[in-house]
Length: 545
Image (cartoon, rainbow, N blue to C red; front, side):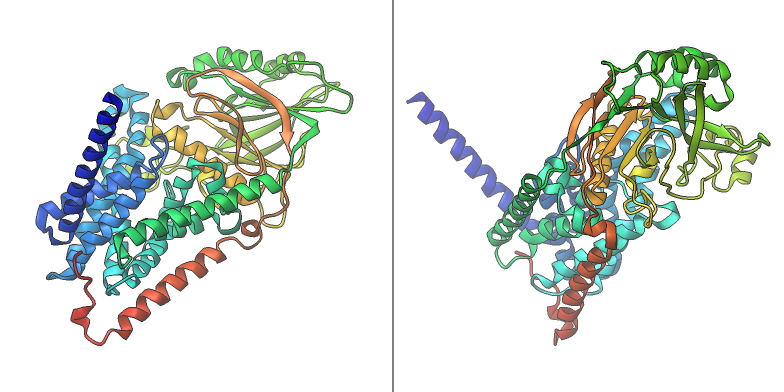
């Protein structure tokens, strides 16, 4: 009887909460001033909680649907474009504050020099990125109309602006809405056809459905049905085609977990090297014909090709024929230009030789090079970039065919967040290798979200990935984006396993973002067409519900 009473009490509580929520939602279009801006900020926070480590994907629908209802109120009021900008900016401020707050932790690694800059990263970056969401709301407001068409106009505007965010000023496509589908392997699978930008279009369309449907419950049902459909399609894809693993390649992924203060101290080069070396020997003897590839993280061994003693010690630790893929720094013979690089070293009978390099081409502004370098040096901020002048960018994505490793495309840290730029279009590798160092960002959302983006690159390309982080989350990822093995944040160790096999080329790999462009165009035609067909512009504002 007590259990029944408790159950009924819980049901009454849920019913009461739902009733109060419905009342609150019905009031959103009528909000004005700071109440409207505060609601927009809260909606942005809710939407951002859909990403790792929270993975509360229903909150994306809560956040975006609330934004639509707030814009309904804007459309019915005075100066709608100005008000839409404010609503969009406050939504973006909440969204990006939760999404990129972890950037500030990097300034505490050398706190005596850079801690004063942490507030600028915490508040300045979200304030800047929020300009994109503000622009999307203004663009959507120009074509606002009654009914579901206003949702289509919003989705089109949001997609265009998110694509711009991923490309303008070198781009920062962090936490695109489609990334929320990383909550489950099956939900990620449509990325093989439409990429992360296409997933973003689908995610935002589902998220606004409760607000733009003729009845909210129909919209909620449509959103749930759409999510279930994507999950079912993905589950079928995972079940039907499994590329399996290769029995001729064994990969060992090293995560040394070196504190960042020690990582950047030149005096500790040898202790760091020795820790990597201690984690690199194969766990069992190699079979006949089996190749062995060790992967070290970003900047594991700077200038290793210029350090004969290190090469000799590496030769003593690795079996003949083994290949080491390591992050490091290399420099031109003139000693002027430095590169954040991946080096390929092969253990041959005569010793270890460097057989290839890849230079990072997509550098991090302010972290790896200085935009407006002359001005920043003049005001004493040259120390933000390494080696005074910063790194020199490489030529672009490469497929390395060197050493004893199968052809692979290397990616260094930040480069994994850029869809469609992981390998040359006309030179598809057999796997991807990512070296990174997320120790800068502490035990935060950043390293977890970074891993989700790496998984997306595997789904988009149909290629497995070996991901080695100094600490972050090292992982072996298959061609479907599934994490087969991982090493948790702030743990040291190694993953040793057969290399997963590549899948066939994906639709996204062949055609890039054309599916996304087509979806965006379809939403735009729907939204613009409904606005154009409206006989009375005053009727285009959606009535509050």
